[in-house]
Length: 101
Image 1 (cartoon, rainbow, N blue to C red):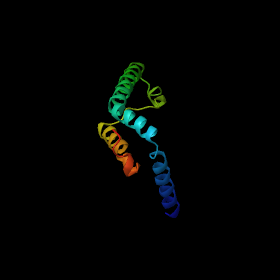
Image 2 (image 1 turned 60 degrees about the horizontal axis):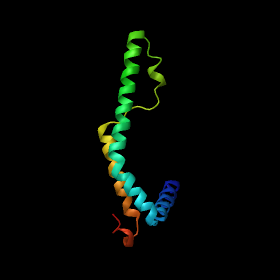
Image 3 (image 1 turned 180 degrees about the vertical axis):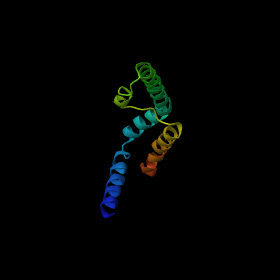
Image 4 (image 1 turned 90 degrees about the horizontal axis):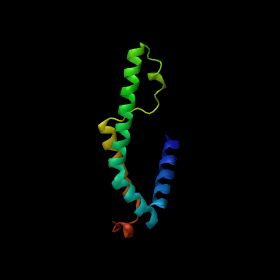
């Protein structure tokens, strides 16, 4: 509990520090604007890959290959929550930098 509190304080301090850089904010905003598209494209690749592995496994009658899949697709709510969090992190930029696009 105390340890978690210290970690949260350190994380908040770190976020305030990195979000105090105008250049970081500019790059972060560019990434955040692309995040939704990038995440969904990546997820689509994961779905296609997983479907291929499942089909092969069914044909072979073995689940061993499925157990090797490390990068599973995200659910839509997970993707949406991650995008929300990405924009929520912008609260850590100082007020004088909130005018940046």
